[in-house]
Length: 218
Image (cartoon, rainbow, N blue to C red; front, side, top):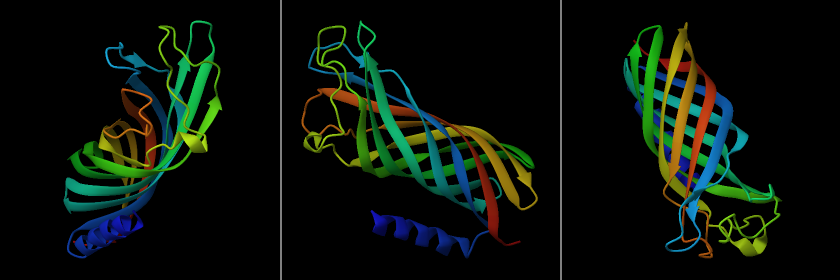
């Protein structure tokens, strides 16, 4: 994965030598994630409660034109779930990832701008932890979401999916501040032992970014 990151970064910097502007910056805010799953074939789909956690990113943004470009991020993100039974007991697990979104950016406006960002993402599981475990079946009597923090749980480490977002930005001289609402959907899943028939993670992020223009050509 490190080789992929280095290759993508090198590509952006090669493009930057020919194009108008390259910006570096940071993005920070909060992510809310949950899981929808079916524990067995024919079981009704269930959606777990949300887990709210901080998220942080290092951002490289390269413009190809005044209002279009591409953005590469290295993001620290937590996926998780909190599942409650009929007695109010809660199972909660968290999976921490290094996520790399590669996004196409489109802007409308000049100094004050509206933007749309979309593209694929991939990443690696850094670690998993079980905050609490109180029950093994949900309120339908079917197996609950499994644990992932033990060595024997053997979660899949590779993640991949799609990311999209909308937001507002303001130019401050050569630099930019952005507020953004972003949605992520996972095609992969952490389950590696076939304990769950079907499952999908999704996340919603609300963040602020500050980008510094480091290369700017007329």
